[in-house]
Image: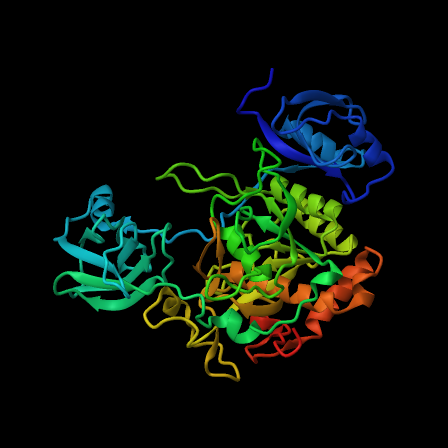
Length: 514
């Protein structure tokens, strides 16, 4: 009888990839039950490995990978056997766009046995910059020690006010971040640095104007896309939509225990990504993506978020792998992975390689760990890793985006910068706008976001544009030569910003060509 302590979940897959498997591995997998995550798990014997028993939880395809439950001893025996199968542990990649954290100084002092300090109460008032009306539901984060994440946070009440207890240093708040309410009118957030507190703090948030020229429209407002070519882009993320400006033609939910047909977006991140790729709207009521009206497929790999105050979790390697294989099956030309931060994972790496072998380009965000090395899975050789850059003057003065500006590296245009949060490395392929990007949000809303998560879909949209104009490449047989040709099409049509290769790879997709 298995116990919860000794049994874990593993991915059982062919030793050499999983796209169109054939031979002994496919035969062995085809004998296993085809259990689905919404159904009942089924116990099965691995005939090629001394008849070891595992419990099948979910299935990619009849002769493809399985999610199974087993213990470490069984996994080790499979991996040491001569059977053409391997078992990889289930791991989790970080949630998209993780929020900043604040730890209360008084609580930290008390827990460490330190001497209590003298805190003060500071009142914050958040208003609409256009009307002066108070804004309820704005998230205020006040740091007295940003490096150690010390300060206080809270949400504004019905009148737009909030009182936080802070231990000020020299009467100052080191950093103040204010995030807009998550419902109703969209706003740019607010950032203040080294703020002297002499009384109540007033913060006004600028409403989003869809005619505003952000960095995406500054560079790619006239991008050229031929919708007749039929290019399809898969968005592997938190889901997509609903949104009136997005053409979603299908998809799947690969989260364990959730309905496969529910690929709408309960978080917003995936919808924002999809809009940057192919929103078909236009100001003043909509926004234009790089490839307006492109055929999108949504693959949700992040679970529905838990009720507050619990924070949303990440995506498992199983869900990501399954989504990649589903995108291959659906015939996508490009897939976008605005996720990462997990450990090296052979299962996802193999899926990325298999996608390339099936003729697809895999565009991956490099990560937002402030100049750390590019994260998995963007560093895999088969991935096209993307860093984030920005441009001064394409976001309002005093907005959150001002906290993303970095002085180094210097490029040839003094208004261009590599985002302060962007990871870097020799694996980087290209860079793209990822600071203050305006895009779609669920429920026909719009708003700004920041991250390499936003830069990656700008690249995916650029690739869709380039591919739509190159019939010879689009019509190639779906194999590695095709995906290599698509990647070359991108890299040969970039222009250098002169940041340096580890920051920008070949540069950014050339607006004059895209």
